[in-house]
Length: 309
Image (cartoon, rainbow, N blue to C red):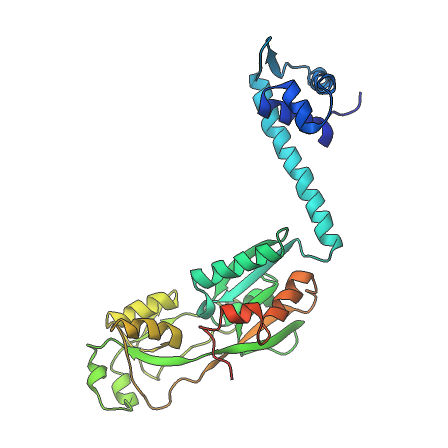
């Protein structure tokens, strides 16, 4: 006997179970009621079980029927996923794209907007997002944990089969709590004064590359935190000093939570790159690269975070 696990047979069964009616299933699938009844009987014979309790007015799934309904639904979903995957590949659209975002450019709002746009443009592509700090971004793409890096720092190693283009820069501000002792010092604040207070630092997440230190004076105490939001909050509370991205400072400054001060040898802007694996040539990757060009859709999303010349 031929297998009953065909898309047509499973669809007949699941539609009948969902509507609790042979006739309604026949109407929805545009076949005869007798064809639906025959298919269900054939499935029951093949499985040697009763799937429906039948009476004159309605039908109900048996316990075996409930189990088969769940499994049949899963199989149908697999059939549809395979079809979508094949169609996607034939069109040059990646089945899956892994994006690593530099934590300097990672906010829930920006990332949600990025995902919304990508899913609208490429609904069949599975998009996964991770975030890393400093050289952890390069680590991710070089070790094939990501296909695309948004905000790879300007510390590219030679070779590695990576394509990249500059998308802007992070501007830094030395920011401290308005009640911090340094807030009352004459500017520019000397390094000898800065060394008296701990620097709040976000640790580089690189595992195979050398870790980068954002800003730390020789002999200055460092307090390591996992992300820039925590760093910002520590500085708001007066627990330390350091540089923060200007977009982060603006919000806290408007609320009176931080003040900025000039120091000798301020931190230079950090160039941000869009990096892709050279072998990544699918439509999603090409579209992302195009939309990070001047005037592009993704450039607009990140324009409040990045400075452009």
